[in-house]
Image (tube, rainbow, N blue to C red; front, side, top):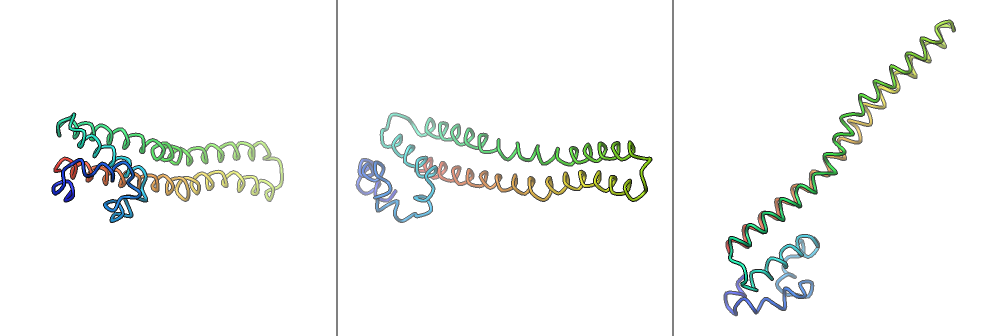
Length: 162
């Protein structure tokens, strides 16, 4: 931003057109590594330089893009969380079906009946293990995307202040 104050907004054009070779962006390797963030910054700097929109319009446009990105980013995490929430119920259904099968074999010896009931309980165990041991933690990993969107909000605020 110091460069734009010293040399004018149009001095940033070369940096915006090729940000990966820009000295300004080279100072921020985390932004260069994040292609979504880099594109977001460059696009809005182009709008600011063009001068065709006032700051309120640009800020509203940024807010809309961030909200859209956030809602799109939440879909996979919410879907996985829903699957994780339903897996224990599937485990219970598997257990009930196993118990029904075991009861259909009630005339067999106690050892066989015990094994059938044990197999029925495996369904419940698997449902709980998959839900709380795998699916729910994976869905939590997706929520880290939301933290990234908070960075977009910080960029928007800095552009608005500019």
